[in-house]
Every structure is written in structure tokens, then in C-alpha cells.
Length: 122
Length: 379
Image (cartoon, rainbow over all chains, first blue to last red; front, side, top):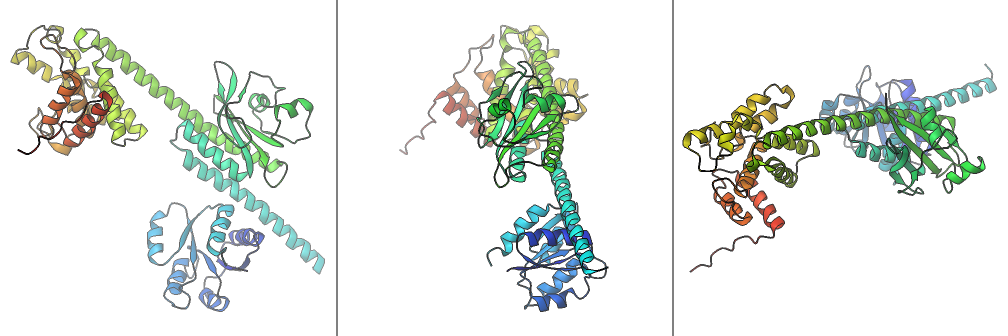
């Protein structure tokens, strides 16, 4: 079963994504603290990571940069959640290795679709 | 807290999350829809709405019916699945399943087991969900979803969601209809204006409409968007408006004009631009009219050269010249389309933009069935 890890400091977003992805039979790991996320990723080896950009302590972008500079973890696709109207951020994010952008507010249904598109083949 | 209480709490939380998630989904959708529908025409709005409703409600059949205000019937504007795309719903009252939502401004759902009459009207559709499309003032029509793929019926949440979608789409459709009406009113006024102007000289009658026909065709060949085409149409309809200041004796003179009279005619683009200069939102139109007799090589009235001349003005220059050459004048007979095209090709790069001259002559040749000139064989 494909494993998806979701990191967001907003509990509602986290619960909503978890519920939606689990309904399609995916294994979901959630995490609210951005600090220490990379260590957990290293241990858990998820098939996909969904990251919120704006988090206290360590930003989603910094986590992504760290992952993508580690040859061992760089292959895990990263979806970034970002607030609407910050389209300029996309360019920065893509340079840092973000695989896909999801602007908030997003449709949980379409999120599930693109997640399945990414990990469904496994 | 014991274990069973904890479990119940967990279930409650999960249910709440799911409900909130659905609401979040709806909000996102409405947000996205208003972004997607802004500035679209009625046809495009219907197309988008149809697709969205089909996916969202997992419905095989979706139909958008619009109100024909004159006949008071509903006609099918767009549809998929089990709906006859030619279906018209005749004038009806609140008892009709199709008219009730529109007249009462309420969304309704009906399942297959409803009363006999409704069942007949809805034959082959299974459970249906219908919401009215209304604007602030206008009744526009309705949207219907039916033949749900996985579940048999629609629920209260579905009714609410389709109602919100239809409400939002209705506002955008009303805007689109109003702006189309304003546009056609504007074009209508300009047309009457031009007809009045042309009435003063039998020699120029119909010139503006013909040039407009040519210009719009060239615009399409150059890949103009519908909005750009409309702009070009306005420019073209107004291009000779400055001739209102040219004395009728000059316009109708039965012999060659003197240099002094020519000078008066040559001023018409400038006078036209001055007349229209009050139209603040139409600077491009004013400029196009001012420069529609500029020469591509820069030897025209204002000395503008090449791409510095507005594109719409370069198009008009070619179309205007072609129509002038192929129309009789009091002092000369008209040229054939072939002769006029040869003249335009000769002036390509001098009087005219070569790209536009090429597009135009190619189009006229195919329209008139004229063969392009064959190159002379080498001696």
C-alpha cells in the first residue's frame, strides 16, 4: 500500500487530507511539527510527501531543499501546499525541487486525484 | 473517560472532519468557478458548468436549458448523456417539474418513484436534480443533473451545492448577456451613424460595411481573439467618420480632384480621430483611425513607419484601398479584383505591410477564384 506523509501545522487541513487519502485506501502519516520531519522521513520512507510551505520553525521549502540535496531521499516526490496568490513562489519552489504545487484553498477531491496519479502505479 | 467514550469521540471527530471537508470542497469549487467564469461568454460558461456538474455529481446526464423570453419556452443549450439535445420544454406553470424550480427560484430533487406525470416528463433520467439559473434581475434558465452513476439519488447536500453553483453561474451568465446586449447596441448605433454618413454620397455607399467584412476576415486569418475582432470591427466601422467634415461637393465631384481638394480628403483620418477623441476607453480605436492611411515605408501623413503603425490600422489600409480600387468613382471606372490585388502586391512593403498584403491577397484570390500570377520562365 503506498504511503503518503503529510506535514502541516494546521490540524484541520491535516485531518482533512488524512481522511480523504485513507478513504482511497492509502496509508497516511501525519505530522504537525516541521522540526525533525526529515529524520522521520528518513525512517519511514514514504512514497510521497505533502508539505505545507508556511510553517513555524522550519518552512516547507527548507524541508524540501534538505530532502532534495540528500541523494538517498531526493527521489521522493514532494507536493507543496501554498497560499493562493503567491504564484511567484512557484518559481522558487520548482528550482528547489518541488514536484507539484497545490494552492490553498484546494479541492480535497482533486488532491486525491493527483496523489493517486503520482503513487497509484505502485 | 472510558474506552467507549473515547471511541465515540473519535467517531464524532471523524464525521465532523468529513463534513467540514465537504464544505471545504464546495467553497474551493465556488472560488475556482468564479475565477474560471469571469469574462466568459454564455456559450463558454455553459460548457464549463456542464463539465463541472458532470464530474462533481457523478451524473451521466447533465443539461442546461435556457429561457427563450419571447416564446416563453426552455430550449436545450448544452447537454450530455441521456438528454435529447434538441429538446424544448414548452411554456408551463408551477406544476411542471421543469418550470417549478425557475418560477419558485428553488432547487429540487426527485427520485424515480415520484408521481406519474413527473415520471413521464423525466422518462429515462432516473433521479434528477434541478436548479434554476437566475441573475439579479433576469430569469436565465435551469440546470439539470440526472442518471447518477454510483448512487441512485441526490441528497440535501447535493441540492444545496447545485443551487450555489447555479446561483453563481447565473450571475456570470447575466453579465455576459448584458455585455453582449450593450456591445450589439453599440455596434448598431455605429452602423446607423455610418449609414447616415454614407447616404450623402452615392459613391461611398456600402464602402464601410465591405471594408469591415474584409478587415474581420483578415483579423481571423491573423488569429485575432473574438474580443480583438470586435475591436477591429469598431475601428473599421468608424474609419471614415472624419469624412463627415469633407464637403459633399468634393465627395461627389464628377471629375478628378484638384490638389487642394485632395488635401481636404487626406485630412479625414485626423478629423475622425479628433471627433472620437472623447472615447477614453477606445484609445486604440482612435489611433487606428488616425493612422489608417499611413504608409508602411514611413512616407505617409504622420511619418509613422512599419510596426510603429498600429496593427489594426495596417489591416484597414489594405482593406480600404482594395475596396476603393474595386468601386466606381465619378472620375474613373473600378478595377477588377485581380487588378486591385496586383496593385496591392506592387505596393507591398511600400504603402502596405507585406505580411498583411500577402494574407489579404491570398484570401481574396481564394474567395474570387483568381489564380496567383505564374513566375515568368527563365529565358
